[in-house]
Amino acid sequence: MPNVISGFTITRSADDYLLTFETEDGSAIELSASYEQLDLIAETLDAQLDSDEEDALEVDPDD
Image 1 (spheres, helix red, strand yellow):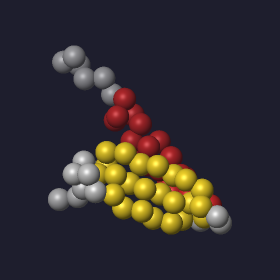
Image 2: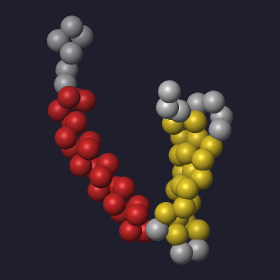
Image 3: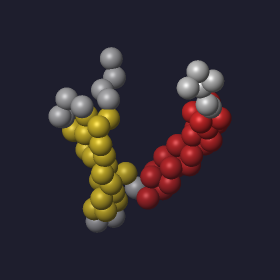
Image 4: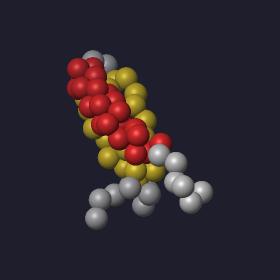
């Protein structure tokens, strides 16, 4: 089963960025990424959220 993200940070580190993902069990993973990689991640997240937006914002008729 995949770990569930409980938080994350992005900090600048010299020529790249340090991404730290914290999980619900208290562990963390650190990843290094370039500006271009972060830009691609942001574009991909935006595209995915745009495609899921209608379903995510759909009002449940039982509420």
